[in-house]
Length: 84
Ligand SMILES: [Cu+2]
Image 1 (cartoon, rainbow, N blue to C red):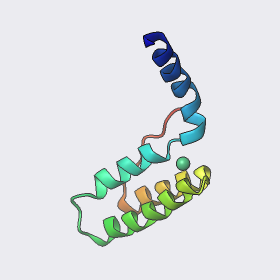
Image 2: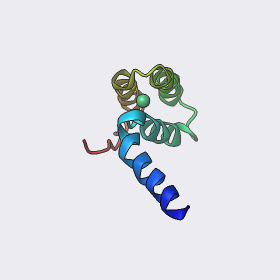
Image 3: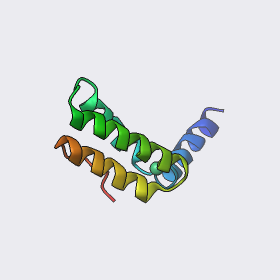
């Protein structure tokens, strides 16, 4: 049983990057940076990040990543992308 679970876990790791892309990681970074900021830039970034989340859920991951970069730029931060 343990071996089966480990195999499933290993398969999940192998497959998930292609499926999930890095959008959730980028969203985390944007929201963490915006969390305690009340300025317009952070508000704008959260709005753009919400659009990015919608694109991610629609399966448009490249467009989603671009949105998160736009959100980060609005706040003057740089996101750490996962190496390709
Ligand atoms: Cu995505």
